[in-house]
Length: 258
Image 1 (cartoon, rainbow, N blue to C red):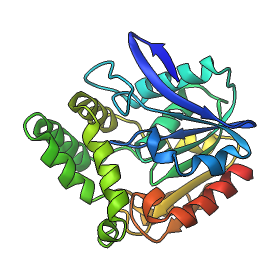
Image 2: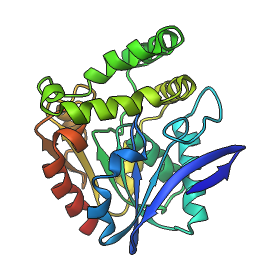
Image 3: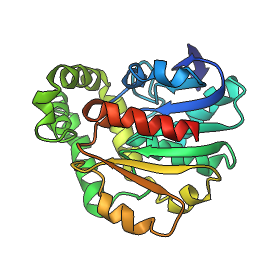
Image 4: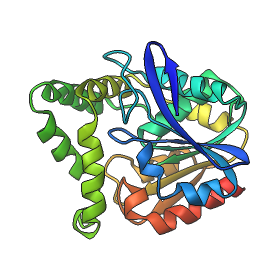
């Protein structure tokens, strides 16, 4: 499906009937990442998956896509579908977008699962790494993507899930340079949103891999102590939908059904 938005096209899918469930992919991914899980989710829910700005088949609208820009794009789709309340699962950058959505449109997000994601903002060191990557993207984009993509997986996962790793890498390499740059700049500018996360009325959950190099489970665990936010650790890295598919399916179904 296509929605025209700010002289661009937003591509999205809708499958199933029931209470709405929104799936938001991460950086260098697309709505394709949810394809294997869609039949499981759509059995009881109306599942909406979206290609975020500059990713998949959705166009870029500028050279910076803030998380708020992406959230407004998502809201346009939800408004088009007449969705007034939605459960959300956001992978990595998709989690940042979900939090921006909850911040901009109070009461829209009823429940939120941050999958290999965080409510924290970037450290100064991380911001510098993103801006350095932006400069590298202008000259040697394919090498940059291939090199950074490896770090998303636990060391043994690259070989263990070689076929799926290569499929995901192909999707990453299809991301336009403009989409890459705009998202990196947007993520570097994002706000810390722990309070926003806490204020969501329904279920709040973080799913994280023990070998995830991008999200620190120990630090997050301390920050959410004595809050209603639940943290679940899976065994592998940042790409739980590939590295921990079975366990991930169980915990996501539990999140959806509660």
